[in-house]
Amino acid sequence: MATKSSVAGDAGLVNRPSLTLKRRLNASPEKVYAAWTNPQQIARWFGPSSVKAGTGQASIDARTGGRYRIGFTNEDGEHHEVGGAYREVVPNRKLVFSWAWRSTPESRRARHHAGGDIARAVAKA
Image 1 (cartoon, one colour):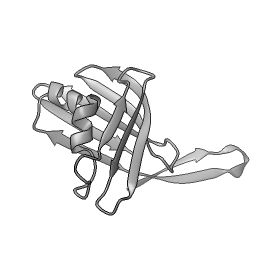
Image 2 (cartoon, rainbow, N blue to C red):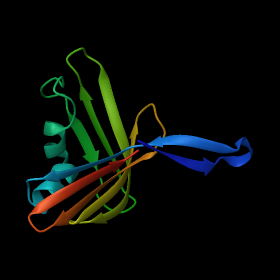
Image 3 (cartoon, rainbow, N blue to C red):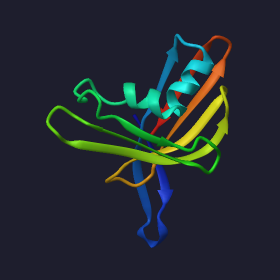
Image 4 (cartoon, rainbow, N blue to C red):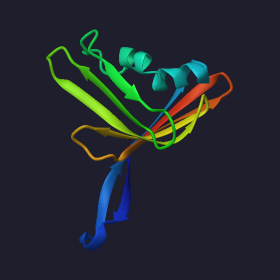
């Protein structure tokens, strides 16, 4: 894990942890794009294995400047919600969006790139 430094007004330097995850997905770029931008699809797969069946929901405006929200309830009855804004959208090629759980600031980004028959996902915190 690397650390980034940035200036935060008069507070001086603030160190923030940084995490990058990369995955090669054995799926076409079109399928990966649909899985991330189709509300019915994302509501079916998003969340941990403890998600209670039928509790997933999503609203997605997959365009640059658009927003999204994804929610689910786990087996313990706890509701979780994440959302953000789309920074860059190139259908079936690239998605760049912010990522924030309801109780945290929007500080995470995710990118999905297509290349040939394989899609690549990169998440940065």
